[in-house]
Length: 149
Image (cartoon, rainbow, N blue to C red; front, side):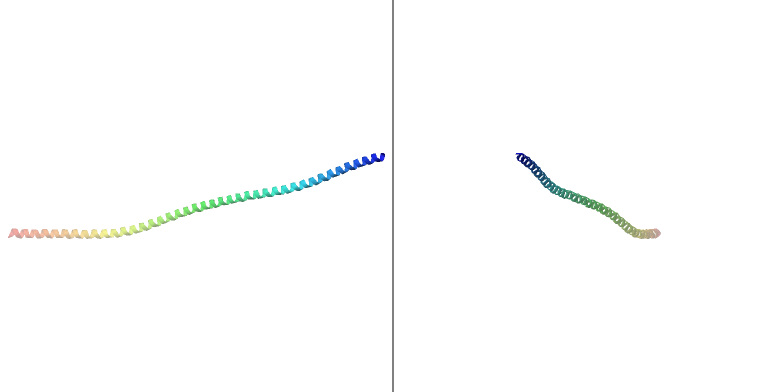
């Protein structure tokens, strides 16, 4: 009878030990599986975050590149406008100098022509005055000859 009781206690003790060992094995296996699953999910999340952050950074870099290109374009446009304005002012100054030169030449030529015309007019007036005085002298002679005759 003692043996039976001892065997019952031993079996119960063995059962409890087996149950505890099975529970511990199951807990270890579940913990290992959960850690494994957690690490896989964590790795997937880290990779997904890296992809998202990479996309965000690429988009930001692309936006910055477009902004830099826009700034360069506006700067080059402003510089081209300044250069065009300087070229226009230079062209106007050159045209002004050329026209001033031509105007002075034309005015000098006209001055010479006016002087020649004035000279000719003066000669004509002198000639006309001489002719008038000759006519007066001729008239006086005729009048005297008519008066004497």
